[in-house]
Length: 309
Image (cartoon, one colour):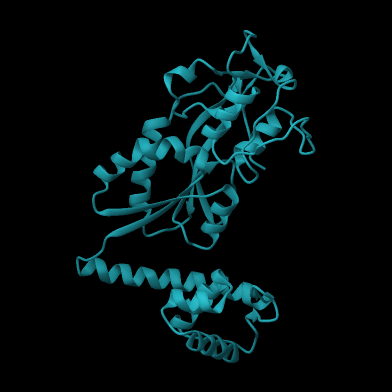
């Protein structure tokens, strides 16, 4: 049977898909890493990597094997944690992934609170797009994901955090009521592909994927930049209701109503985590603070919850 060390090498190489980068991460020479990978393949009797591809690709056997290696390494980590706890040396580490349109307001607001109530816990935060978050959960490189739902997966537990209305930034708006039929005639400024708010905006406002603009277009990486494009060029963009804006811009943020059913768009913000984790107690403490800060009762009959796919 292959060793724990070999499993670690396999997982790192599957992530880097390059022998030199993987050996650097593992703090071994490239020949040492190559030799250990080859020994693992000889012991198992199957090729794990297709060396004819560049970058390296996993074989069908390798794809299944890496999943098992991740599970084994995760269980081994539990043993290390138990020993550290017994020795009084353990400091829990929570790796949090969050989509940018939520992190922009949630992290500045809650990070000081988390630091205060979770003194002995190390929280590492990384912004990712939705698909990247789900891949990171699958690969166990994060412990918790915060994103817009819905998500359903047998391996993961989903916890509702709060519901957030989506509004339009539209300076100088004249209509008393902003409807989707009115927005059909305006230029939409969209987040770039991979951001779920882009997809939600296109669905609710019936923006076609094939949409061609009369003039050049810009797909932004953050809401602030899109708002600047609106200020300069006209049109509109969508803004989550919790997004922090200067007072002078708040008057230009308006509720949107569907021309079909008079509903306004909203998204459900959720936490997604593995069904079982040794960090459950700390993660739940972190989640409770989010719910306490942002959870508000919303009349679901007046809102259309948007999906991100």
